[in-house]
Length: 270
Image 1 (cartoon, rainbow, N blue to C red):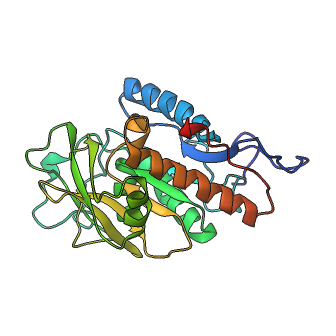
Image 2: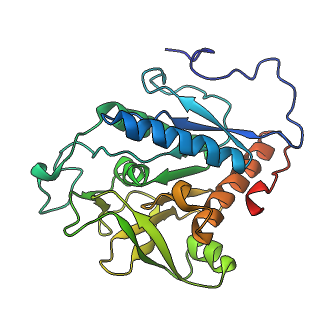
C-alpha cells in the first residue's frame, strides 16, 4: 500500500516554508472506546501545538499505510495518551503482572504506535510519547510494563529528575530544581528493570518510584516519553512548558536538516 493525499499532505509543488509558518507534526487521531476522551484529547492537542507554532497533522489509524514507506512530510511525531492498556501478553509485562488488570486494549493504536516508532527510529524524527505513548515507546523497543500500580489515583504528585540526564539539563534551566509537580492518570507504568533498546530513565515519582520519564541515550536525537500529560498543564507547569518547547525546537532543527527554513515563534513565552 502506498501513501496518497488521503493519508498525508503532499509536498509536491509546495514552496519552501518561510519564517512565521508553523511546522507540521504527525499525531495519531485519538482512538479508544471512550469517545469523550478522544474528542477532548484532540481538541487540547490542537490548541497546544498551535501555541508552539506547530500544526497537527492528524493520522487516521485505519489509513496509516503498512508496511513502511518513505513517509509523509512531517517534522516530528507525538504519541498521545489513551485510556486503553496494552493487550495481555506475558512477553510485554513483568513478572507478577495480572491479565485481570488489563483494561480495554486498543489493538489498532498498538499497531499504529509500533509502526510510527519504527519509522521515527529509521528517520531520526523527534518523538514525544505521552502517558500511553510512553508505554508504547518502551514496549515497542523491547521493554516491559507493570500491569497495575497499586494505590494509584489520579491527581498530582512530585517527580524527581535524574541528575545528568537530558531531561535534567532541560528542566534545571527552568528554575534550577530537580523535583517537579506533575499530573497523573494512567494506572500502568514502565518497568525500570526492563527498558526498551536505547532508553534510560530520566525521572521517577517521588513517593512510589514509578517511572515518570524515559529518554533516548543519544544526545543528537529528541526521543522522550513522559508519564504525565504536559499538554494539560503547560500554562501552569514550567516543566511541561519547557518539554513542549524543546520538542518544538527539535522539530525546527530537524526541518532545517531537511532544507526547510523556519523561525520558531515563541508565542508560548507570553
